[in-house]
Length: 372
Length: 176
Image 1: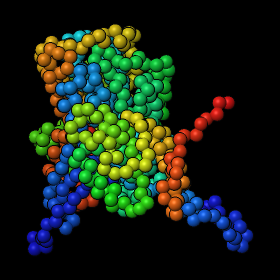
Image 2: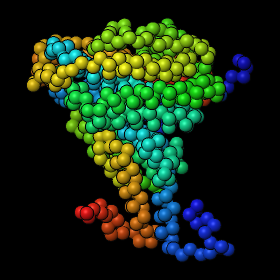
Image 3: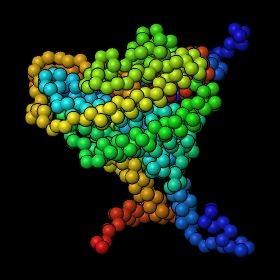
Image 4: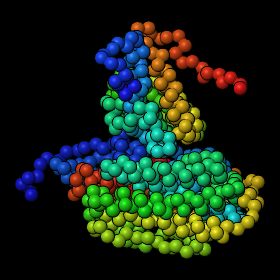
């Protein structure tokens, strides 16, 4: 093939591109149809999270955490409020933690549904997108009846929650789970094991486990490569250690271990595990006042704290430094999408331009999370 | 043209003004540029997915500015992105319309005060036809904004420029 090598060309993909999942720009160096290098350019959605964290007090930062990874708002809040509570050294009622876990897991399902739906859309399947959004709307209804917002909730506050669960929530959540299990089977029949879909994703964008670890990948991207690492299990926070569930990892069932199909399928399997957690949490939901532990004034002692949690995209961490005032000295967010995106050149070299779409979609980034 | 198909026996004439005809055609198939910026883009996706189904208004997402009539600025416009948005807007063919969706693109929203990298309102770089408030606006609100845009197009004229009262206040709801 060496004599057929032609001059390399630089192809610009994005920031306006239907399948870059937001405002990502990828500079592709291509040799004919083959990708020689892919350089992601970021910063098109930089929204100054750290600057806001310096300027606002602890409670006011929660809405900005919402807007970091806007598909996993609940998970972002969860990690942040856990950090602030650790700084304040307060114990929240058990009911609060249970409700937080329920919400975080519902959010994980909602986020994965968007990811799965848009991934199908990228590959060329339109119907799964509609199926996923139909089910996602039901989860959003649950959120809406709890706190009034559909997308960005500001639901978890340092020390408690903005609202208790409304009457009828538990029944509605159970009804959703009952509806959703068969719907997932339907989705699998429609998309996951679809011949065309498998042909487009299997053996594409193979990510070996060692490279994934070296780049600091986490979440479904890491687990797709067969690494059994989930912070909910490996370093349990909140009340995750009280529930019985499994870490799902990629199996290489359709092609090679760590290909796009594995990364996709881990998300599908994770939904089932999230349902299991929610069911157990609903069964054992303790009573209590969700606002009992909310401090009147959040003024942590001088110190610093690093909390990490498992967001739908991977390891989400906050490093909070307190100088003893009502405003944090610094809050740094460690975003999973940022680390996962850095893998892109590594896993896209040697594949075709058309495969780039499958690879970007499978890494599942949120640009708000990358740029913050 | 399903409405008029086979309604008349052997050819017939419909009399209307050219403004009415063109406006009707334009407002009934507003092709939208498939372009998401931030959080609001998720609500925009929800608006065009099942449950809200924006396509019943003739809004079809197109991936290129050259084939689209309306651009929905859905999310925070950073300084770095602003140049690209202006470029995209300029690539759209006339007539072109802009819906500014959400607080961020209306005015900078939550990033108004400390957002050093955020453009304080997309109307500083491109003309906006309809502003949809909310952070993020519900899909219903976006549909309302879209219908307002359709109303605006309905009143356009190719002969008269700057028709008085182009944007009319919302109709008052009579108390029942």
